[in-house]
Length: 342
Image (cartoon, rainbow, N blue to C red):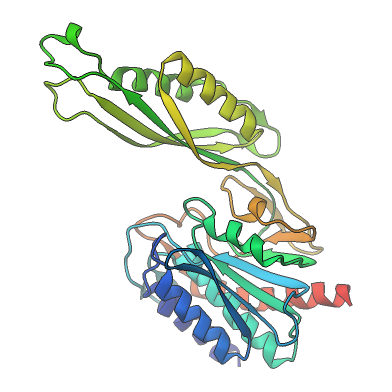
């Protein structure tokens, strides 16, 4: 039985990796998931989150608002590349973030259904990698689970705390002219660069448990040629917040006003704390998840196989043994929590 389950989850992970689902283009992945759950005999809801984009919520027969929900996201970062494997690893976009994890959840769901355990659901959403669009839409389902198990690559540790994230787009306006006569124009790039320098050098507060707040200037665009003063320039900045997202935004507001540039908040997610489960090793992560955006009053557990260090890379991968063991762990977590509910 062990080998059969192992190969099943390995094959399923590769099958899902080979369905591209970069954020904004998740439809084919959603259809695959809906069909999979229907074959298990689960009740499936395709919930529209945006045009041609939908979440999948599947639940056991007779449990439209189940006590326990497994959750992860079906979208991936770009660029897409297909699955390959060796004796130890599965490679491909989404291997660990999060199609290998979804495969473990799906096989665990099958095993639970076969054991006639049906008071659970699986919520797989779009848009996690960009703006949490899917999980925000999922709040309209009015689900009230006692337990939410969220699958992300945590290296098999139960995560107690995660950083928040603030993503902003800075935009600077200038006046173009010949670069030989800069006194007749105004470069949009200069104030943008100055503002970015201040943000990079700012002494962001630290948190004793979550560590440092870190900043990444992800993209910069501006200008048309070296001999023309730039009429417009923009940058997108991501800040991993260990203390207070509101304080970060206040600093951004102050610095952008000083340099007479504008900013737009794309993402604002506060640091969050999750729950313990007896007997499971724990940890803290520097990434953010959908968790703060899902409204419910139950307990939340963040756990999954794979390493975030492999996510978003050209060699994204997840261990075959790891996702095989994850099937068992998800089943054990579900049984333990559902028994405590009874």
